[in-house]
Image 1 (tube, one colour):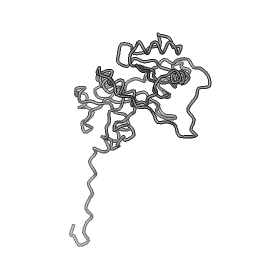
Image 2 (cartoon, helix red, strand yellow):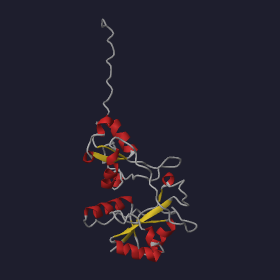
Image 3 (cartoon, rainbow, N blue to C red):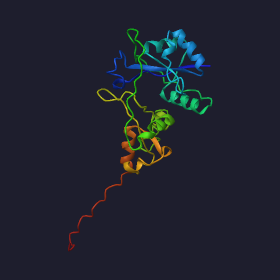
Image 4 (cartoon, rainbow, N blue to C red):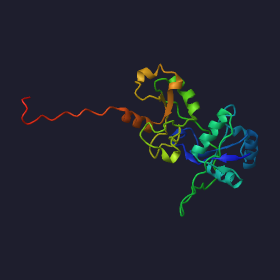
Length: 235
């Protein structure tokens, strides 16, 4: 049995304005809920902080300070793709492959450290985007583990993330930018938006704004080039 903790993410605008003292935390999970509760108790986490206990996404949110304590106590560090693979295997009822461990920092680089203990934040996800078939958004996101499902339709290879975009709904969008909002949009980008409202959820997929914009540009037909008139032509 193993306990896992992913990398710290700054959720920024996703929680800012909701009275939270911190916008940065990671996710602590394990092979079984019982092992997770026992480990969390040793870290001083309260049982009521346990989240999504009735779904396959059960976990504890931990601040950077608690994450460091978890690693010292023996938790295995995984990256975002490793967490997605772990949740997908749990949802399908199979044993997960060994989660991917993030690469070690370059010599001379510094890991982010918290100067003082921070209270555990309560995650408040941003509202789902209203695209086309908005009623199927939750179903599509659950199936995609709230991660963009683009595998190159946008023109990018996603080589560093095993061929699939690793952008998650609600993650930090960058300095001065809102948090990322995934769309439940047609797999076929040629389908028009008013037609997408009638599509069943099995024909939709999770898209991040960057990948969907790239896929739309890639699918757009190239403009026709006009033939310049010949010098001796009559018209």
